[in-house]
Every structure is written in structure tokens, then in C-alpha cells.
Image 1 (cartoon, rainbow, N blue to C red):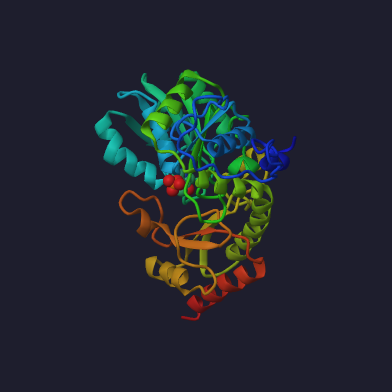
Image 2 (cartoon, rainbow, N blue to C red):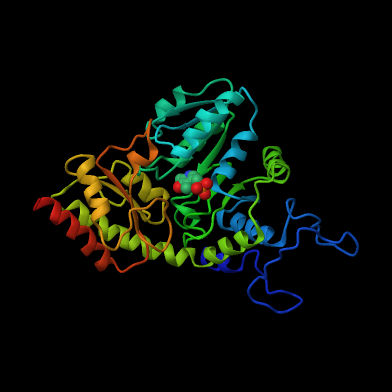
Length: 374
Ligand SMILES: *Cc1c(COP(=O)(O)O)cnc(C)c1O
């Protein structure tokens, strides 16, 4: 079956007992041990809604197994905790700032070493490999510079180094990019973003190409560590996943139009969008992504003051964090990320939602025109 169909049917059969087409929510924390062949016994260790979500996500990413978490960060935390103290991880220099903070505040003390490199420079990645390198962390397109990394080439470097390749596929989603098919061992998602898709649920997931020993450790941390999503959260994410393919295609089309509009505006210095032929990662993105995504960032002529004027001067688009929902959102990343941020002071990140492109364009062009006229 095609991905669009699997998004609606994988892990979500018609209920045998009631005929319900939509899965019910199972809130019970405990399951009777007698006459119970379901395998469920306590909801931290497994729940019907979580199994439905994990089955669907494994199918969409082409993996053998998936584990759902209470947030994207809980999924990342687990992926790193499943390594050993003393192990070494290579990560992008514009790594999601939450992971940067996690490393600084927690994993340094825990003894996990992380080297950050520019992942568009494959020689730099090869040079960063150490004897204890066990994981290559890939994030593409990246946040907030929307840089594109060559997933297949990076997965090859990881394999040659005896390390796992893990791709944070939050921005691309399985609709646009299939990291496991490109050679990765693991995919990570913040389900809070496109998978949930409506900015109303927090969640995370890890999907594995194999039922490996490493993934057994992931599963143990999920069940014993307990950072699991509630049955209702699983249900909400799965409901979002059903419309993921159509939402994303519409959002990509709008993003491409807005990128071109912003690129042509005299108050804009540069637009970072892989769909633009001028983008450094355009050719790689064209090869490894079905479409160019619905995330873009742009630099306003001037500095932080001008960028803030734009972010706070829009009438339709809220100045707010997060991405992947129905609402278009704009955000000044440098002030959010703080110390160590790769975001220039005049950069704004745009998560393109599902509003009509003309209304979004009017809002953006209006505020940029006002900036020019002083
Ligand atoms: C949001 C996000 C995360 C973290 O996920 P949470 O659900 O907020 O914990 C990780 N990686 C990327 C790329 C994200 O956008």
C-alpha cells in the first residue's frame, strides 16, 4: 500500500468487537492477567493506543519497530541513553538547540562525548570519527538555517565507522524523506510537529530499521524510564498522521510560493529554502526529498531590531515557537536559542501552515513594505 493509505490504515484496523472504524481510547492502566492474550498488563509497558501509533509510524518510515515517547526530547534522551558512557556522537553544528542543551547540562556529566561539525562537509564528518564513535546524528533540513545534509553519504560514513546513523526526520516527515531507505539505522520524530500537525499534543518517537540489540535497550528505557505518551496523546498523534500526507503537500506548495515572494522582496537579504535553485543544498534535496518542505527562514535587511519589527508586526501570523501545525508561525530564533545559537540576529524562521497563500503573502509583504518605507 502507498504511504497515504498506510497513514490511515496501518495499525488501525476496524475494531473486531464493535465495528468502530476509528480506534477507541483505552485509558485503563492495568489489564487482567486471566483470559488476556493481548500481551498488555500495565500501561507504562504497553497500551493499545501506543501500539497502534507505533505500528503506524514503523510502517510509514519502513522500519521494523517503533517506540513512542512523551515528547521529542524524551525520544532523543532515550536514543542517547541507549549508548554507553564514554561513547562518542557526531552531530550537526546547527543541531536542534534542545539537544545542544541536553548535552551540555546532562550528557557531559554522564560521560557521553559529542562533536559538532558542518554536516554538508563530508570530509569534516569523516575527520570527526573517533574509535568510540557510536552514533552519527543527522538533522536535515536543519534548524534554523534549513541546511541540507546528504543522508545516504552520511549513513555510509556511519556504517564504515561502525556507528549507528540516526536521522531526526521531524522537519521532512516520512512523506518527504525516508532515512531508513537511505541507509540510516534509526529515525527520530518530534510528533509534536507535523505528525500531530495541529499544535495540540506533545510526543516523540524512535523508529528502527531492525529489531536490534540497540533497539531492545531503547525499548527498555521507554518502559522502565517511563517517559511514555498517554493513550489520549497517542490517539491524537495518530489522528493527525491520517492527514499528514495531504497537509504536508499543501504546506510545501504554499512554502515554495512564499519563498519565491520573500526572495524577490528588497527588504529581504536572503531566503533559506531548499526549493530555491540558489540554495546550497538544492541538488541533494531534489534527490533525497519528495518535495522541499514547509519550513523556511529568511534574513531581514538590517539587524535584530528590524527582524523583531517584522515578527511582531504581522497581523495574521503569530510570533510563536514550534512548527508543523495548521497555523503559520514566525519566530526570531537567535533570541530563543540564546548562547551558542547559529541563527543570525536578523533571521526569522517561518513554519508554513494551511492558510491561503494569498493571505500569508499579503501579511508578509505588507510588513516588509512598511519596513522599507520606514
Ligand atoms: C521540536 C523538535 C524537537 C524536540 O521535540 P519536542 O516534542 O519539543 O520535545 C527535536 N528536533 C526537532 C527538529 C524539533 O523541531
